Length: 202
Length: 344
Figure (cartoon, one colour):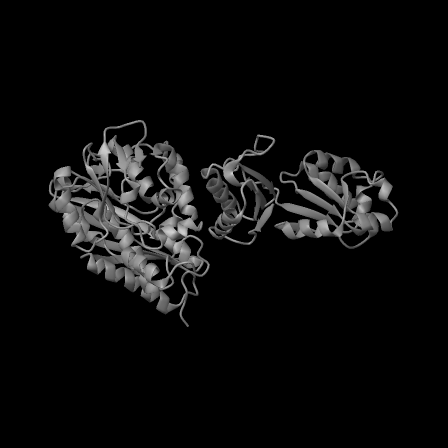
């Protein structure tokens, strides 16, 4: 697979790179194009579909990944996940990174009360984050016996990706007690943080 | 220090136009004006409104303004003015007065402001009109244009809704200006090619309009933000006819085809494709590059003239010798068929 990373570029630059990569691609090989704006995504999809190629598109926040096989052969599962042209812009373009098990500075009791309120309120919020990351003592929030575990599970079923730092779980010796989401490493956490338009640190 | 007008401009010129689909939806339930003197209203999406004052005179009113298309303020002023004046010419009229419409940041340089206005003023003078005033606003991205009043005899109005089957379609300026502008921004186009587009955008459609009157042409429109197919579609819809367009006959700016070939396709062309392609039937033989050039948004583009077949030779001859050397016969008007536009 060939990858074109056109993040940070405006139309028509991402399309030029796509066209170039496609020309250099061998038949039946797959091309992945990554862009960070809706207009580029739509235009690249229109262009590829106009060439009779079938396009697959995945959007996480404002990051769009476009997959296409040269020569327009159908993907093996036969159905494209979502049609690019009709895809609506996802509003949940932010992530929340919890670096501790309380909210703000000040008395510990208050901080824990506040973080509980924060997370329990979140499922009712109109715009959900697309990912929540738990680092350092923040991992305590995602443990089985956490006071907000039900809310986190609810968020997870609503499609919010929940990620806990593996090193941190190890350090606190809580690796077996994670109650929600998945364990991840610093590499992935950096990827997610750097790809997001907005990161909230409560 | 020379001020670069293009700094911070994403969509310059007519590419900044709101999508036709959105506008159509917004105006959907508007009550139709019921005034016998209003000879051309918004119904047919014509270039300008025309209002009869008496049996000899009707006024043409139009406005157009947009963000910079080029770095030089004087040239921007000229282009924006030529583009705004063009709607009067597309209706077959002559310009009488114009008002400046200008937006620029509060800390804009005085020289820059002066140059833009001078460019506009020079074009209005060239058009035989006069600037009578204007309005300015403090706004982050500069924008300039005119509100123009023209005059036409009520019997000589040229509309975009009077094409007749059997008419021949003439285009007076090349296409691909939008593509070249996009290519300039990413340094993929030579200076000579770029300059040619700028000069074309500055050129008034006045001579062409006078030639249309000489040969009693009844139907024309100017090619701007919706691209050739977008404007042709409005003309075909308004006239209740279909059109055949020969993509091989379309005059193109040097370098435009090459830019499209590498994927330098401006967003406006995709937007126009989105709104117009469903009403167009494109033969398989039409290359993708040619198709996208037919959708390319033009700023201060040429006139698309629907002329009676018996005059076509004389009209094109006159146009070619009056400053429009790229003039070409690009198609013909037919009885209404399944699609409004057929491209081969």
